[in-house]
Amino acid sequence: MERRLMEHLSCWLGGRPATSGLDIIGSPGRGSPGWDGKIHPALGVASPEGGVLSVPAEHAATVAEQYAKDDKDLTALGPRIPALVGFPERGWFTAVYRWTTHPPPFPDAGVWVPADSPETPDWLRPFGGDVLIATDPATGEHLAGVGIKRHDAHGHELAVVTAPQARGRGLARGLVAQAARRVLDEGAIPTYMHDPANLASAAVAEAAGFSDLGWLAFGATEARQRQRAV
Image (cartoon, rainbow, N blue to C red; front, side):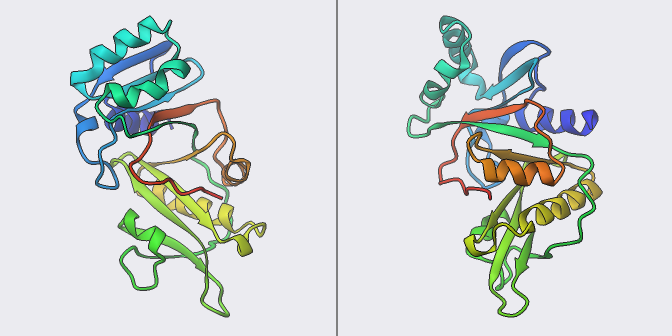
């Protein structure tokens, strides 16, 4: 777990979380397109002990100076970071950050199909690769699906959405566990992020083997609206 996770964070962010405090580092990765082809100019992950915030190299000193002026309070500084790194139109997010190495052996809940397949719902198409879909066997109606944000070779983030009429059946947790098993089989670590207030997503994560260990992710929001995972 530690090896896969740290390899992922080192590649995705340009450095692993500090053992104490917060390291603000400049990374060329912040100027390169991410999983969705868009620029993600500020990203960070923190354990209960310490964290790392990755920003473009040319802005690292400015952000670090402002962090020191704000008494090293990321809660206060965070919303101002997008403007400091040249993206004033972006917002700031904080999410619960989870991962697993032992998803439960639930029965498979869906089937894998190419993201560009005609049967793939629109919201899953941007993920590319294969996506996981559950449909109603009687009507063919889409009930839920999982897309994979392939950040790098070492870490793949899962995103799940369930149709309102299909909630409460345990479908989302089955799909997330199934997707996590595939990611692990491919040699990467499956990760899962959600808004701290999204209790439904938190319950899905817990049931699928993604324990809350007190880790957080934070950074500039994506250019488009995030899907709400349920």
